[in-house]
Length: 149
Ligand SMILES: [Zn+2]
Image (cartoon, rainbow, N blue to C red):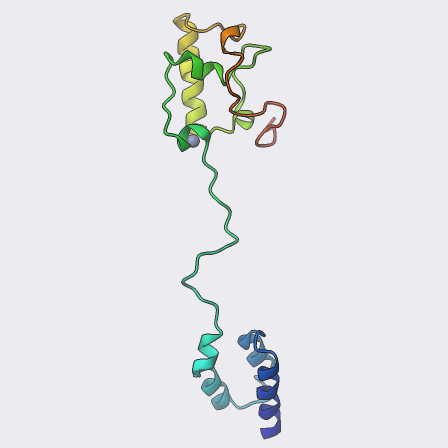
């Protein structure tokens, strides 16, 4: 019995990065429960436990759409902004998977675009050529999400 524990200690010294819980469970049946408790409560064992206070480094960054990111409110009078979400070929609004907008902003955009058409501020059939040289907010040939249809 003693030689087994001595062997464990020697192995622990050689491989300090091996997780202690694994080590303990592997030899749990062979060593006495009292010894295990001593080992678990020891300072050295506690030091090697994972640090719970650190943030998860593998967590994905939350995706924020471009309008939410800069706090832009879509308005039917802001024709230039609306035209940036309109296709120059069909004059129709791009879908959510292409624009990369969140559900709420896309809904607001569609509502305001419809309103702008009703007030004749924007055409329903084509994109105003004076806005064709505006910077592109997204690439229509590379959708940001897969097509839901
Ligand atoms: Zn958003």
